[in-house]
Image (cartoon, rainbow, N blue to C red; front, side, top):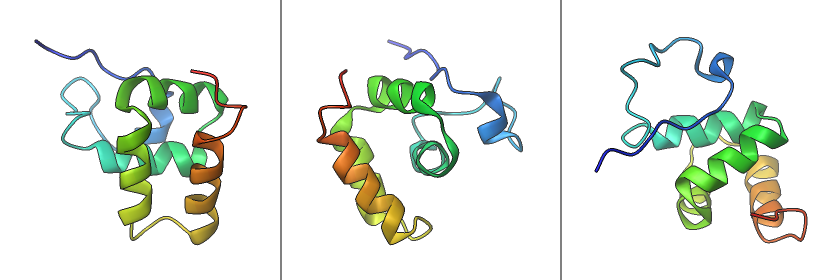
Length: 84
């Protein structure tokens, strides 16, 4: 079964060819970009595609995300604002 691509704004991954981009293998890049620069639509799509557990695991282990971004991700994922 082939999983469809995540539907986020292409400029978040501007340096990659999205026609051949492996969204599953490169999930850390995608998740970090959405956390740092995504809007609410990107966040909702990221949660739909990867699920809360994967996002939290990537955020927690990320060496490039700031502590602020990691804390926001944790709070948002568990908040009432995140209705998925």
